[in-house]
Structure formats: C-alpha cells, structure tokens
Length: 254
Image: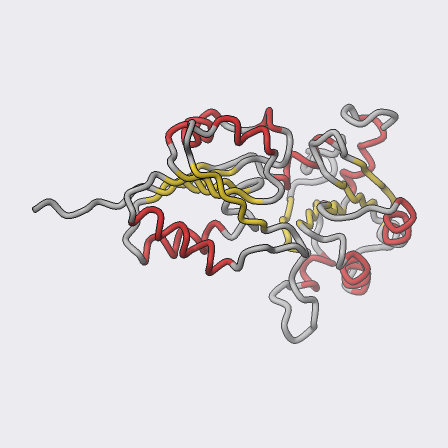
C-alpha cells in the first residue's frame, strides 16, 4: 500500500501593503492552494486570487493584536499538510525578515512537511521608498541595517548591540518601532548618534493610508506623538531621510 504523502506548504510574502507589489509566484501559490492562512496586515484583495472553495483562515499577527499563538499557527500548517492539503501561509512583507517565517519553516522541516519559501517585497525597503527615502545613497549611506523595534529594550535582555548602532554610519530601519520609539531614540543618542540626525516615522506604508512624519532623533518622538501616528509604522534613522524633501512622490503634499 502506498504511504500517504503530505501536501506542500508555501510560505509566501505578501509584500508591504500595496497589492500591486505582490509577486507572480505568490499569486500562483494562492491559485493552487486548498488552504490559505493569512496575517492581519495582508491586503484582503490578495485573497481574491485564492482558488474557489479554498479554506481561508485568519491568523492575526498584528502588533499588539495577536489572535493566534505562533505555536498554534505552526500546528495548523502541519495538520493541514498531513491531511494532504496544499497550503499557502500568506505573511506580510517578506517571510524571513522579522516575519517569523524561519520559525514556521523549522516546524515544517521537523515534521517532515515539504515546503517552499516565496520571498516578498520587504517593508524595510518598500515603505521608505514610498516615502521618498532611499535606504542607501552613494553620497550619504553605503550601509543599511534592519533592526526589530519590538524587542524588549532591557539592558540585560536585549540582543541588539546599541553601542554598535549608535556609532555606526549609514541607515537604520526599525520594524515595529513606534511603541518603543522613545527608548530607541534615547539609546541611539546615548551611544553616539547626534540629536540632529534625521529621522522619520512612516505609518501604513505603501497603502492609501500612508502618512510620514520627519524630524530628528531629538524631536521625532514628539513629532510622531503630535501627529497621532499608530502602528503599523516603520522608523528610519539616517541622513537619507533628508532626501525626502526632494524625492517624495506618493503622498499628497509630501
């Protein structure tokens, strides 16, 4: 008797928000899947590509509003695949850039489930671009560093080397950094970044709701608070932010 073969799981990046930035391969995965498990920040228009009759399941995973534990999501992926289903796990941005896609891939590998990773356009590049901020520029930034802004910032628990970030040159991009923005700004200034360093906070990047607030490390916390910005938001720190005045193209009025 032939052993039952598990289905395949596709870990698909949905991009940063604008559905036009979704990849053709991701669309093909949706069209072929029996089950789609999607995150809160995924544009719902992408779900229109799911094949008729597919089970479409909401996983949550929005900052501060996680509706399912990561372990539960891992278990769902394994369970549906073991039942023979083709599964698309649709995740915001890129699955392997602060998307916990690596954790899901490891769970699948340990369970012996075939999987593929379909990279998506990362918010770390696309969101600043939609705000008119290139993360690199030959004249001002030869290095860009992606940092989680959602990690605990306790001195004894943080895995982030704040001394390196504060003294380094180039651009810093903090994912999910708005709630910890006061601590981020303080740490960077304490470790070498001047208070005059340009900084920006971009809310709902690449979508019709995008708003961008610029300032400096010394005043960006107050600027963001005054504007009433809320997550999801990306924080950019570095001289490239100053280019926005000339390069903004997406938001009305710049």
